[in-house]
Image (cartoon, rainbow, N blue to C red; front, side):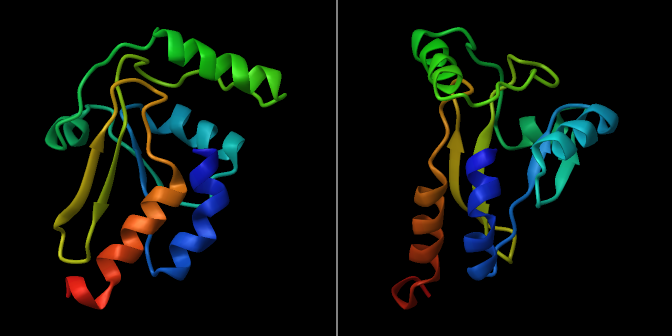
Length: 133
């Protein structure tokens, strides 16, 4: 989330919007978004209907590289946030064009399995290139 927060202006420069959808109720999600100072919309999907429609499911949370990533955050004095919602629900990253067509889909296997914001920006630039139109 922090990568997306920091890269949000670059997404807006591409005339793109970042949306976060979480399988959690609105009240805890609003508090979480406020705590992280997210500049983009955060949508509640408490039933998980959107997650399942995008093919996202449950995953393994406790893996060696997940623990290593958490240790790195602590080592670099980054704050670890208390999980909100179902910690077994894995995330995904999608690029959906203005016609509603999914142009890129990444379904994570665990909380650390996410593309870098720079990679998403590169993909968006590629999708906007004249060769693709």
